[in-house]
Length: 170
Image (cartoon, rainbow, N blue to C red; front, side):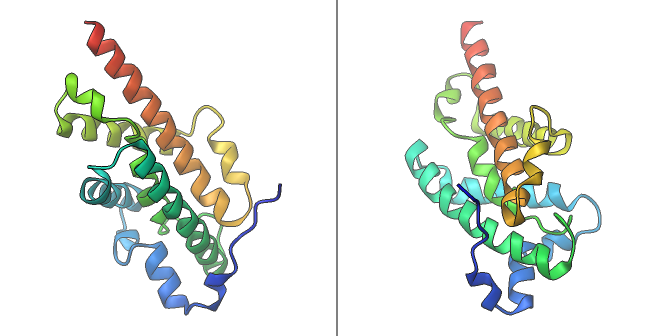
């Protein structure tokens, strides 16, 4: 199976593509734009994904991934750079995957602590890129931009579940 970049963004104006991929001014913040994109993603999660279960998060998260692959890949092409730092839509759409199955963690921690831990772990995995996450950046086009962030988010979800399981046993 070959991963293909969606072609429909080619027909959009550059300003629209770049504003979408950078989340407007967020990606243009000079210091740590990926962190700010993740903060926006956490807000996105709390406003839209908070009440959803795993299936709802997977469904709407998959739509976000598709949109991010399309727009981030096109932004990468138009900017002429591989995975440009100002493109933060990838972090934004990855954040909900950090919290897959998070509701049972409420037995051991309040929501704010779970969200703070998830945010911190995601940034750690997104920057450090352990466990083969870095290799995912080699995927073509927008897939390489987005896949490493999704993997970092899934690693975060696993860590949160393990931490929750350990805290329940204490």
